[in-house]
Image (tube, rainbow, N blue to C red; front, side, top):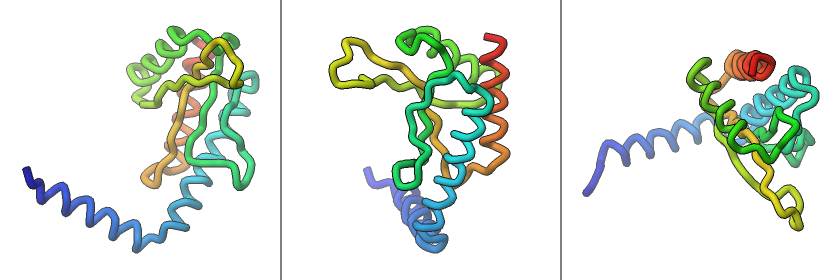
Length: 136
């Protein structure tokens, strides 16, 4: 099934990215990611941060868990769902072994900053996360 509109949209998107410049896009995404990490650290100083905020090691992903028990997947999922339902923000949960010999999974929330976001989006998200956390 040939989907010409989808193929054209993809080609147009790639052209737009080339016009903006991939380096500029990466720089913008990393700026927003850094802002997110800084604001989260200020709003939730006890949260476990799993994404480095170190130049050369950072990405557009911010991974963290605001709760003391980082193995409580159910609580984290409820938090994520309430953030979407009550505040309109959609973020993901993720699970991983923090250390290779761990016998348990660490669970975290993952925020992805994108080209189409701006500072107000990041600030609003962090405010919503903090508001929900302190009332959770």
